Image (tube, rainbow, N blue to C red; front, side):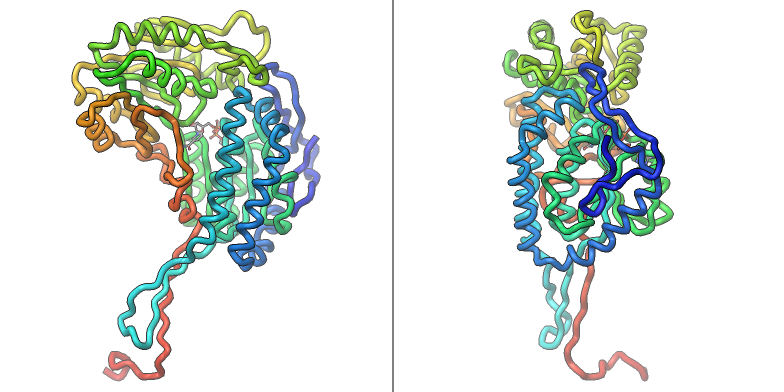
Length: 486
Ligand code: NAD
Protein backbone atom coordinates (compact mmCIF):
# COMPACT_ATOMS: atom_id res chain seq x y z
CA UNK A 1 0.00 0.00 0.00
CA UNK A 2 1.47 3.33 -1.13
CA UNK A 3 0.84 6.87 0.11
CA UNK A 4 1.51 10.11 -1.73
CA UNK A 5 5.06 11.35 -2.41
CA UNK A 6 5.23 14.94 -1.16
CA UNK A 7 8.30 16.93 -0.10
CA UNK A 8 10.53 13.87 -0.67
CA UNK A 9 8.64 11.69 1.79
CA UNK A 10 5.66 9.39 1.95
CA UNK A 11 2.49 11.09 3.17
CA UNK A 12 -0.50 9.12 4.38
CA UNK A 13 -3.88 9.68 2.84
CA UNK A 14 -6.48 11.68 4.74
CA UNK A 15 -9.04 8.91 4.26
CA UNK A 16 -8.76 5.12 4.05
CA UNK A 17 -9.93 5.07 0.40
CA UNK A 18 -7.61 3.09 -1.84
CA UNK A 19 -7.28 2.19 -5.53
CA UNK A 20 -6.32 -1.33 -6.60
CA UNK A 21 -3.72 -1.47 -9.35
CA UNK A 22 -4.12 -4.58 -11.50
CA UNK A 23 -1.92 -6.48 -13.90
CA UNK A 24 -3.94 -6.37 -17.15
CA UNK A 25 -2.47 -9.70 -18.29
CA UNK A 26 -3.67 -11.63 -15.22
CA UNK A 27 -6.18 -9.28 -13.55
CA UNK A 28 -4.28 -9.87 -10.28
CA UNK A 29 -3.88 -6.97 -7.84
CA UNK A 30 -0.29 -5.71 -7.92
CA UNK A 31 -0.59 -3.14 -5.15
CA UNK A 32 -2.87 -0.44 -3.82
CA UNK A 33 -2.41 3.31 -3.85
CA UNK A 34 -4.20 6.06 -1.97
CA UNK A 35 -7.27 7.69 -3.49
CA UNK A 36 -6.24 11.26 -2.71
CA UNK A 37 -8.41 14.33 -2.31
CA UNK A 38 -8.20 18.12 -2.50
CA UNK A 39 -6.43 18.02 0.87
CA UNK A 40 -3.40 16.14 -0.52
CA UNK A 41 -3.35 18.32 -3.65
CA UNK A 42 -3.21 21.44 -1.43
CA UNK A 43 -0.40 19.90 0.58
CA UNK A 44 1.61 19.04 -2.54
CA UNK A 45 1.02 22.42 -4.20
CA UNK A 46 2.14 24.26 -1.03
CA UNK A 47 5.27 22.15 -0.95
CA UNK A 48 5.97 22.81 -4.66
CA UNK A 49 5.27 26.52 -4.25
CA UNK A 50 7.80 26.83 -1.41
CA UNK A 51 10.36 24.77 -3.33
CA UNK A 52 9.97 26.97 -6.42
CA UNK A 53 11.77 29.86 -4.71
CA UNK A 54 14.74 27.58 -4.07
CA UNK A 55 14.76 25.67 -7.36
CA UNK A 56 14.43 28.62 -9.75
CA UNK A 57 17.47 30.30 -8.13
CA UNK A 58 19.75 27.27 -8.43
CA UNK A 59 22.17 27.90 -11.31
CA UNK A 60 21.01 26.10 -14.45
CA UNK A 61 24.29 24.20 -14.64
CA UNK A 62 23.63 22.71 -11.17
CA UNK A 63 20.06 21.86 -12.12
CA UNK A 64 21.48 20.15 -15.21
CA UNK A 65 23.79 18.04 -13.03
CA UNK A 66 20.82 16.97 -10.89
CA UNK A 67 18.80 15.97 -13.95
CA UNK A 68 21.75 13.91 -15.25
CA UNK A 69 21.93 12.27 -11.81
CA UNK A 70 18.27 11.30 -12.18
CA UNK A 71 19.20 9.52 -15.42
CA UNK A 72 22.07 7.74 -13.67
CA UNK A 73 19.67 6.52 -10.97
CA UNK A 74 17.26 5.29 -13.65
CA UNK A 75 20.10 3.19 -15.09
CA UNK A 76 20.69 1.69 -11.61
CA UNK A 77 16.99 0.84 -11.18
CA UNK A 78 16.45 0.00 -14.87
CA UNK A 79 15.22 -3.59 -14.60
CA UNK A 80 12.87 -2.79 -11.69
CA UNK A 81 11.36 0.10 -13.65
CA UNK A 82 10.95 -2.00 -16.80
CA UNK A 83 9.31 -4.81 -14.84
CA UNK A 84 6.95 -2.45 -13.04
CA UNK A 85 5.92 -0.81 -16.31
CA UNK A 86 5.33 -4.24 -17.86
CA UNK A 87 3.26 -5.48 -14.94
CA UNK A 88 1.04 -2.43 -14.55
CA UNK A 89 0.62 -1.40 -18.20
CA UNK A 90 0.85 -4.73 -20.03
CA UNK A 91 3.00 -4.10 -23.09
CA UNK A 92 6.01 -6.36 -23.81
CA UNK A 93 9.31 -5.93 -21.95
CA UNK A 94 11.14 -4.79 -25.10
CA UNK A 95 8.65 -1.94 -25.53
CA UNK A 96 9.15 -0.92 -21.89
CA UNK A 97 12.93 -1.02 -22.35
CA UNK A 98 12.34 1.46 -25.15
CA UNK A 99 10.04 3.54 -22.96
CA UNK A 100 12.77 3.76 -20.31
CA UNK A 101 15.35 4.77 -22.95
CA UNK A 102 13.03 7.62 -23.84
CA UNK A 103 12.66 8.75 -20.23
CA UNK A 104 16.40 8.65 -19.54
CA UNK A 105 17.24 10.31 -22.87
CA UNK A 106 14.68 13.05 -22.30
CA UNK A 107 16.20 13.91 -18.91
CA UNK A 108 19.68 14.09 -20.45
CA UNK A 109 18.44 16.14 -23.40
CA UNK A 110 16.65 18.76 -21.27
CA UNK A 111 19.43 18.85 -18.67
CA UNK A 112 21.60 20.34 -21.41
CA UNK A 113 18.92 22.36 -23.20
CA UNK A 114 17.86 23.96 -19.88
CA UNK A 115 21.18 25.77 -19.60
CA UNK A 116 21.23 26.73 -23.21
CA UNK A 117 19.42 30.07 -23.06
CA UNK A 118 17.57 32.58 -20.87
CA UNK A 119 16.04 34.67 -23.64
CA UNK A 120 17.49 37.22 -26.03
CA UNK A 121 18.69 40.79 -26.32
CA UNK A 122 16.91 43.16 -28.72
CA UNK A 123 18.20 46.24 -30.51
CA UNK A 124 16.97 49.19 -28.35
CA UNK A 125 15.35 52.43 -29.59
CA UNK A 126 18.30 54.36 -28.02
CA UNK A 127 21.22 51.97 -28.29
CA UNK A 128 23.74 54.05 -26.25
CA UNK A 129 21.73 54.17 -23.01
CA UNK A 130 19.17 51.37 -23.26
CA UNK A 131 18.97 47.62 -23.14
CA UNK A 132 15.97 45.57 -24.18
CA UNK A 133 15.85 42.03 -22.86
CA UNK A 134 13.43 39.23 -23.56
CA UNK A 135 13.61 37.03 -20.48
CA UNK A 136 12.40 33.46 -20.35
CA UNK A 137 11.25 32.61 -16.84
CA UNK A 138 9.70 29.58 -15.18
CA UNK A 139 6.00 29.84 -14.33
CA UNK A 140 6.02 28.27 -10.88
CA UNK A 141 4.14 25.08 -10.05
CA UNK A 142 3.28 22.92 -13.06
CA UNK A 143 0.47 20.37 -12.68
CA UNK A 144 1.31 17.25 -14.73
CA UNK A 145 -1.59 14.88 -15.43
CA UNK A 146 -0.65 11.69 -17.27
CA UNK A 147 -2.45 8.74 -18.91
CA UNK A 148 -1.74 5.03 -18.51
CA UNK A 149 -0.40 4.06 -21.95
CA UNK A 150 3.15 5.44 -21.54
CA UNK A 151 3.20 6.27 -17.84
CA UNK A 152 6.86 7.32 -17.61
CA UNK A 153 7.63 8.47 -21.16
CA UNK A 154 4.79 11.00 -21.13
CA UNK A 155 5.78 12.00 -17.61
CA UNK A 156 9.40 12.52 -18.68
CA UNK A 157 8.35 14.63 -21.67
CA UNK A 158 6.64 16.98 -19.17
CA UNK A 159 8.74 17.03 -16.03
CA UNK A 160 12.22 17.00 -17.61
CA UNK A 161 11.63 20.29 -19.52
CA UNK A 162 9.50 21.79 -16.72
CA UNK A 163 12.26 21.16 -14.14
CA UNK A 164 15.08 22.18 -16.49
CA UNK A 165 13.24 25.48 -17.00
CA UNK A 166 13.15 26.04 -13.21
CA UNK A 167 9.56 25.06 -12.40
CA UNK A 168 8.48 22.64 -9.70
CA UNK A 169 5.87 19.94 -10.35
CA UNK A 170 2.88 18.18 -8.86
CA UNK A 171 2.15 14.95 -10.73
CA UNK A 172 -1.20 13.16 -10.95
CA UNK A 173 -0.49 9.78 -12.60
CA UNK A 174 -3.22 7.64 -14.11
CA UNK A 175 -5.06 5.67 -11.44
CA UNK A 176 -4.37 2.56 -13.55
CA UNK A 177 -0.57 2.91 -13.67
CA UNK A 178 0.65 4.96 -10.69
CA UNK A 179 3.28 2.52 -9.38
CA UNK A 180 6.10 3.29 -11.82
CA UNK A 181 5.65 7.04 -11.25
CA UNK A 182 5.85 6.64 -7.47
CA UNK A 183 8.93 4.42 -7.87
CA UNK A 184 10.64 6.95 -10.15
CA UNK A 185 9.96 9.81 -7.73
CA UNK A 186 11.18 7.90 -4.68
CA UNK A 187 14.25 6.18 -6.18
CA UNK A 188 15.43 8.48 -8.98
CA UNK A 189 14.32 12.01 -8.10
CA UNK A 190 14.83 12.05 -4.32
CA UNK A 191 18.10 14.02 -4.59
CA UNK A 192 16.22 17.08 -5.87
CA UNK A 193 15.38 19.63 -3.14
CA UNK A 194 12.21 18.63 -1.20
CA UNK A 195 9.04 19.80 -2.90
CA UNK A 196 10.49 20.07 -6.40
CA UNK A 197 8.76 16.83 -7.45
CA UNK A 198 5.52 15.70 -5.76
CA UNK A 199 3.11 12.92 -6.66
CA UNK A 200 -0.53 12.75 -5.59
CA UNK A 201 -2.36 9.58 -6.58
CA UNK A 202 -6.08 9.24 -7.12
CA UNK A 203 -8.89 9.65 -9.60
CA UNK A 204 -9.36 12.47 -12.12
CA UNK A 205 -12.12 13.66 -9.87
CA UNK A 206 -11.19 14.95 -7.31
CA UNK A 207 -7.37 14.87 -7.60
CA UNK A 208 -6.83 15.92 -11.24
CA UNK A 209 -9.55 18.52 -11.08
CA UNK A 210 -8.29 20.01 -7.79
CA UNK A 211 -4.93 20.50 -9.48
CA UNK A 212 -6.59 22.06 -12.54
CA UNK A 213 -8.53 24.58 -10.43
CA UNK A 214 -5.82 25.32 -7.83
CA UNK A 215 -5.00 29.06 -7.88
CA UNK A 216 -1.29 28.41 -7.29
CA UNK A 217 -0.88 26.13 -10.33
CA UNK A 218 -0.53 28.41 -13.38
CA UNK A 219 0.25 25.63 -15.91
CA UNK A 220 -1.43 22.31 -16.54
CA UNK A 221 0.45 19.85 -18.75
CA UNK A 222 -2.05 17.15 -19.64
CA UNK A 223 -1.96 14.07 -21.84
CA UNK A 224 -5.15 12.07 -22.17
CA UNK A 225 -8.46 11.84 -23.98
CA UNK A 226 -10.20 14.62 -25.87
CA UNK A 227 -13.14 14.40 -23.45
CA UNK A 228 -10.97 15.01 -20.38
CA UNK A 229 -9.04 17.73 -22.22
CA UNK A 230 -12.31 19.52 -22.96
CA UNK A 231 -13.37 19.26 -19.32
CA UNK A 232 -9.99 20.63 -18.16
CA UNK A 233 -10.28 23.52 -20.65
CA UNK A 234 -13.71 24.44 -19.26
CA UNK A 235 -12.55 24.32 -15.65
CA UNK A 236 -9.29 26.22 -16.25
CA UNK A 237 -10.57 28.90 -18.64
CA UNK A 238 -11.89 31.35 -16.00
CA UNK A 239 -8.48 31.26 -14.31
CA UNK A 240 -6.62 32.04 -17.59
CA UNK A 241 -4.24 29.15 -17.04
CA UNK A 242 -1.65 27.98 -19.54
CA UNK A 243 -2.95 24.70 -20.86
CA UNK A 244 -0.64 22.27 -22.55
CA UNK A 245 -2.98 19.63 -24.00
CA UNK A 246 -1.89 16.42 -25.75
CA UNK A 247 -5.12 14.66 -26.69
CA UNK A 248 -6.44 11.80 -28.80
CA UNK A 249 -5.74 10.80 -32.37
CA UNK A 250 -7.09 8.83 -35.31
CA UNK A 251 -3.90 8.53 -37.30
CA UNK A 252 -4.04 7.52 -40.95
CA UNK A 253 -1.52 5.37 -42.84
CA UNK A 254 -1.41 5.68 -46.63
CA UNK A 255 0.01 2.86 -48.71
CA UNK A 256 1.33 4.42 -51.91
CA UNK A 257 0.89 2.86 -55.37
CA UNK A 258 4.66 2.23 -55.70
CA UNK A 259 5.35 0.28 -52.49
CA UNK A 260 7.18 -2.98 -51.88
CA UNK A 261 4.69 -5.25 -50.14
CA UNK A 262 6.72 -6.95 -47.40
CA UNK A 263 8.40 -3.98 -45.68
CA UNK A 264 5.20 -1.95 -45.95
CA UNK A 265 3.17 -4.71 -44.31
CA UNK A 266 5.68 -4.91 -41.45
CA UNK A 267 5.70 -1.12 -41.03
CA UNK A 268 1.91 -1.04 -40.85
CA UNK A 269 1.61 -3.97 -38.41
CA UNK A 270 4.09 -2.25 -36.06
CA UNK A 271 2.41 1.13 -36.42
CA UNK A 272 -1.08 -0.23 -35.71
CA UNK A 273 -0.34 -2.89 -33.10
CA UNK A 274 2.49 -1.49 -30.96
CA UNK A 275 1.28 -1.49 -27.33
CA UNK A 276 -1.78 -3.42 -28.55
CA UNK A 277 -2.84 -0.40 -30.62
CA UNK A 278 -2.93 1.81 -27.52
CA UNK A 279 -0.54 4.55 -28.66
CA UNK A 280 -1.93 8.03 -29.25
CA UNK A 281 -0.24 7.86 -32.68
CA UNK A 282 -1.31 4.28 -33.40
CA UNK A 283 -2.40 3.82 -36.99
CA UNK A 284 -6.19 3.63 -36.74
CA UNK A 285 -7.22 3.81 -40.40
CA UNK A 286 -5.43 2.68 -43.55
CA UNK A 287 -5.85 3.83 -47.16
CA UNK A 288 -4.36 1.44 -49.71
CA UNK A 289 -3.72 2.27 -53.38
CA UNK A 290 -6.08 0.19 -55.47
CA UNK A 291 -3.36 -1.33 -57.70
CA UNK A 292 -1.58 -3.00 -54.71
CA UNK A 293 -4.61 -3.60 -52.52
CA UNK A 294 -5.14 -7.35 -53.12
CA UNK A 295 -1.54 -8.48 -52.61
CA UNK A 296 -1.02 -6.06 -49.73
CA UNK A 297 -4.14 -7.22 -47.86
CA UNK A 298 -3.25 -10.91 -48.22
CA UNK A 299 0.28 -10.33 -46.94
CA UNK A 300 -0.97 -8.18 -44.06
CA UNK A 301 -3.38 -10.86 -42.87
CA UNK A 302 -0.55 -13.44 -42.87
CA UNK A 303 1.71 -11.07 -40.92
CA UNK A 304 -0.96 -10.28 -38.30
CA UNK A 305 -1.82 -13.98 -37.87
CA UNK A 306 1.86 -14.70 -37.12
CA UNK A 307 2.03 -12.31 -34.12
CA UNK A 308 2.11 -13.90 -30.68
CA UNK A 309 -0.25 -12.73 -27.94
CA UNK A 310 0.67 -13.12 -24.30
CA UNK A 311 1.62 -11.42 -21.05
CA UNK A 312 4.16 -8.67 -21.69
CA UNK A 313 6.53 -10.17 -19.16
CA UNK A 314 7.12 -13.26 -21.37
CA UNK A 315 9.98 -12.68 -23.82
CA UNK A 316 8.16 -14.39 -26.71
CA UNK A 317 5.21 -11.98 -26.59
CA UNK A 318 4.67 -9.60 -29.50
CA UNK A 319 1.36 -8.16 -28.31
CA UNK A 320 0.18 -7.88 -24.70
CA UNK A 321 -3.30 -7.29 -23.30
CA UNK A 322 -5.36 -4.13 -23.43
CA UNK A 323 -5.29 -2.03 -20.26
CA UNK A 324 -8.71 -2.91 -18.83
CA UNK A 325 -12.19 -4.28 -19.31
CA UNK A 326 -13.80 -0.90 -19.93
CA UNK A 327 -11.32 -0.15 -22.74
CA UNK A 328 -11.75 -3.59 -24.32
CA UNK A 329 -15.55 -3.20 -24.17
CA UNK A 330 -15.35 0.16 -25.98
CA UNK A 331 -13.07 -1.41 -28.59
CA UNK A 332 -15.62 -4.20 -29.10
CA UNK A 333 -18.41 -1.69 -29.71
CA UNK A 334 -16.34 -0.31 -32.62
CA UNK A 335 -15.86 -3.82 -34.05
CA UNK A 336 -19.58 -4.59 -33.62
CA UNK A 337 -20.61 -1.31 -35.22
CA UNK A 338 -18.33 -1.99 -38.20
CA UNK A 339 -19.73 -5.53 -38.64
CA UNK A 340 -23.28 -4.28 -38.35
CA UNK A 341 -22.64 -1.79 -41.17
CA UNK A 342 -21.09 -4.33 -43.53
CA UNK A 343 -17.41 -4.60 -42.58
CA UNK A 344 -15.67 -7.92 -43.19
CA UNK A 345 -13.27 -9.34 -40.60
CA UNK A 346 -10.25 -10.95 -42.31
CA UNK A 347 -8.57 -12.13 -39.12
CA UNK A 348 -9.16 -11.64 -35.39
CA UNK A 349 -12.43 -10.12 -34.27
CA UNK A 350 -12.67 -11.98 -30.97
CA UNK A 351 -11.21 -12.43 -27.50
CA UNK A 352 -8.55 -15.16 -27.80
CA UNK A 353 -10.00 -18.36 -26.32
CA UNK A 354 -6.64 -19.52 -24.91
CA UNK A 355 -6.63 -16.85 -22.17
CA UNK A 356 -9.06 -17.26 -19.29
CA UNK A 357 -7.89 -14.08 -17.58
CA UNK A 358 -6.47 -10.80 -18.83
CA UNK A 359 -7.84 -8.18 -21.20
CA UNK A 360 -6.62 -9.76 -24.43
CA UNK A 361 -8.09 -9.24 -27.88
CA UNK A 362 -6.92 -10.75 -31.15
CA UNK A 363 -5.38 -8.27 -33.58
CA UNK A 364 -8.06 -7.66 -36.16
CA UNK A 365 -7.92 -6.76 -39.85
CA UNK A 366 -11.11 -5.40 -41.43
CA UNK A 367 -12.17 -4.42 -44.96
CA UNK A 368 -15.37 -2.97 -46.47
CA UNK A 369 -15.17 -0.10 -44.01
CA UNK A 370 -16.04 3.57 -44.56
CA UNK A 371 -16.05 6.85 -42.68
CA UNK A 372 -19.61 6.40 -41.39
CA UNK A 373 -18.34 3.67 -39.04
CA UNK A 374 -16.98 4.37 -35.54
CA UNK A 375 -13.86 2.36 -36.38
CA UNK A 376 -12.98 4.87 -39.12
CA UNK A 377 -14.06 8.06 -37.35
CA UNK A 378 -13.62 7.85 -33.55
CA UNK A 379 -10.48 6.91 -31.61
CA UNK A 380 -10.58 3.09 -31.24
CA UNK A 381 -7.41 2.61 -29.13
CA UNK A 382 -7.03 -1.11 -29.66
CA UNK A 383 -5.60 -3.77 -32.00
CA UNK A 384 -7.62 -3.04 -35.16
CA UNK A 385 -6.43 -2.41 -38.72
CA UNK A 386 -9.32 -1.19 -40.91
CA UNK A 387 -8.45 -0.97 -44.63
CA UNK A 388 -10.00 1.19 -47.35
CA UNK A 389 -8.78 1.51 -50.94
CA UNK A 390 -8.33 4.70 -52.94
CA UNK A 391 -8.01 5.41 -56.65
CA UNK A 392 -6.18 8.77 -56.81
CA UNK A 393 -3.66 10.26 -54.38
CA UNK A 394 -5.83 13.41 -54.04
CA UNK A 395 -8.62 11.17 -52.82
CA UNK A 396 -6.24 9.62 -50.27
CA UNK A 397 -5.25 13.06 -48.94
CA UNK A 398 -8.88 14.07 -48.66
CA UNK A 399 -9.69 10.90 -46.70
CA UNK A 400 -6.73 11.46 -44.34
CA UNK A 401 -7.86 15.01 -43.56
CA UNK A 402 -11.49 13.99 -43.05
CA UNK A 403 -11.25 13.65 -39.26
CA UNK A 404 -11.48 15.92 -36.24
CA UNK A 405 -8.06 14.78 -34.99
CA UNK A 406 -4.66 15.67 -36.45
CA UNK A 407 -1.96 14.02 -34.37
CA UNK A 408 0.20 12.06 -36.83
CA UNK A 409 0.06 10.52 -40.31
CA UNK A 410 2.20 7.99 -42.18
CA UNK A 411 2.96 7.49 -45.87
CA UNK A 412 4.78 4.53 -47.45
CA UNK A 413 6.12 5.62 -50.80
CA UNK A 414 9.34 6.50 -52.55
CA UNK A 415 7.72 8.85 -55.05
CA UNK A 416 9.04 12.30 -54.12
CA UNK A 417 6.11 14.06 -55.77
CA UNK A 418 3.62 12.12 -53.63
CA UNK A 419 5.74 12.57 -50.51
CA UNK A 420 5.89 16.35 -50.88
CA UNK A 421 2.16 16.58 -51.52
CA UNK A 422 1.54 14.43 -48.46
CA UNK A 423 3.60 16.44 -45.98
CA UNK A 424 2.32 19.75 -47.33
CA UNK A 425 -1.38 18.87 -47.51
CA UNK A 426 -1.96 16.64 -44.50
CA UNK A 427 -3.04 18.44 -41.32
CA UNK A 428 -1.15 16.56 -38.62
CA UNK A 429 1.53 17.49 -36.09
CA UNK A 430 3.90 14.70 -37.14
CA UNK A 431 4.34 13.25 -40.62
CA UNK A 432 6.24 9.99 -40.93
CA UNK A 433 7.47 8.98 -44.37
CA UNK A 434 8.19 5.23 -44.50
CA UNK A 435 9.34 4.90 -40.85
CA UNK A 436 6.26 5.21 -38.61
CA UNK A 437 6.25 6.30 -34.95
CA UNK A 438 9.92 7.22 -34.74
CA UNK A 439 10.38 10.27 -32.53
CA UNK A 440 13.38 12.53 -32.01
CA UNK A 441 14.34 14.27 -28.75
CA UNK A 442 14.93 17.48 -30.68
CA UNK A 443 11.79 17.18 -32.84
CA UNK A 444 8.56 18.70 -31.44
CA UNK A 445 5.71 16.25 -30.93
CA UNK A 446 2.03 17.22 -30.67
CA UNK A 447 -1.24 17.55 -32.49
CA UNK A 448 -3.21 19.81 -34.78
CA UNK A 449 -7.00 20.23 -34.75
CA UNK A 450 -8.65 18.45 -31.78
CA UNK A 451 -5.50 16.46 -30.96
CA UNK A 452 -4.38 19.38 -28.83
CA UNK A 453 -2.40 22.59 -28.65
CA UNK A 454 0.91 21.48 -27.15
CA UNK A 455 4.34 20.49 -28.37
CA UNK A 456 6.55 18.20 -26.31
CA UNK A 457 10.26 17.54 -26.98
CA UNK A 458 12.59 19.94 -28.79
CA UNK A 459 13.04 23.59 -27.99
CA UNK A 460 9.26 23.96 -28.24
CA UNK A 461 8.92 21.50 -25.35
CA UNK A 462 11.13 23.68 -23.14
CA UNK A 463 9.42 26.91 -24.18
CA UNK A 464 6.08 25.45 -23.06
CA UNK A 465 7.33 25.82 -19.50
CA UNK A 466 8.88 29.28 -19.86
CA UNK A 467 7.03 32.54 -19.62
CA UNK A 468 8.14 35.56 -21.67
CA UNK A 469 8.97 38.89 -20.04
CA UNK A 470 10.17 41.99 -21.88
CA UNK A 471 12.52 44.31 -19.94
CA UNK A 472 13.07 47.86 -21.22
CA UNK A 473 16.04 49.33 -19.29
CA UNK A 474 17.15 52.96 -19.68
CA UNK A 475 20.23 54.01 -17.71
CA UNK A 476 20.40 57.72 -18.69
CA UNK A 477 19.04 60.36 -16.24
CA UNK A 478 17.66 62.70 -19.00
CA UNK A 479 14.05 63.78 -19.18
CA UNK A 480 12.47 62.48 -22.38
CA UNK A 481 11.05 65.15 -24.68
CA UNK A 482 7.71 63.27 -25.00
CA UNK A 483 7.03 63.46 -21.21
CA UNK A 484 4.86 66.29 -19.69
CA UNK A 485 4.41 69.09 -20.26
CA UNK A 486 3.37 68.75 -23.93
P1 NAD B 1 -8.04 10.02 -19.68
O1 NAD B 1 -8.38 11.33 -20.28
O2 NAD B 1 -9.14 9.15 -19.24
O3 NAD B 1 -7.12 10.23 -18.38
C1 NAD B 1 -5.89 10.91 -18.44
C2 NAD B 1 -5.57 11.45 -17.06
O4 NAD B 1 -6.51 12.48 -16.74
C3 NAD B 1 -5.66 10.43 -15.94
O5 NAD B 1 -4.63 10.66 -15.01
C4 NAD B 1 -7.01 10.75 -15.32
O6 NAD B 1 -7.13 10.35 -13.97
C5 NAD B 1 -7.05 12.24 -15.45
N1 NAD B 1 -8.38 12.85 -15.38
C6 NAD B 1 -9.57 12.28 -15.63
N2 NAD B 1 -10.57 13.18 -15.45
C7 NAD B 1 -9.99 14.35 -15.08
C8 NAD B 1 -10.48 15.64 -14.77
N3 NAD B 1 -11.80 15.93 -14.79
N4 NAD B 1 -9.61 16.60 -14.42
C9 NAD B 1 -8.28 16.35 -14.42
N5 NAD B 1 -7.76 15.14 -14.69
C10 NAD B 1 -8.60 14.14 -15.03
O7 NAD B 1 -7.09 9.28 -20.72
P2 NAD B 1 -6.49 7.80 -20.62
O8 NAD B 1 -7.56 6.81 -20.90
O9 NAD B 1 -5.69 7.66 -19.39
O10 NAD B 1 -5.45 7.81 -21.84
C11 NAD B 1 -5.79 7.49 -23.16
C12 NAD B 1 -5.98 8.75 -23.97
O11 NAD B 1 -4.78 9.52 -23.95
C13 NAD B 1 -6.24 8.47 -25.44
O12 NAD B 1 -7.25 9.33 -25.90
C14 NAD B 1 -4.91 8.81 -26.12
O13 NAD B 1 -5.00 9.19 -27.46
C15 NAD B 1 -4.45 9.95 -25.26
N6 NAD B 1 -3.00 10.12 -25.40
C16 NAD B 1 -2.54 11.22 -26.09
C17 NAD B 1 -1.17 11.38 -26.28
C18 NAD B 1 -0.63 12.58 -27.02
O14 NAD B 1 0.56 12.84 -26.92
N7 NAD B 1 -1.43 13.33 -27.75
C19 NAD B 1 -0.28 10.44 -25.77
C20 NAD B 1 -0.80 9.33 -25.09
C21 NAD B 1 -2.17 9.19 -24.90
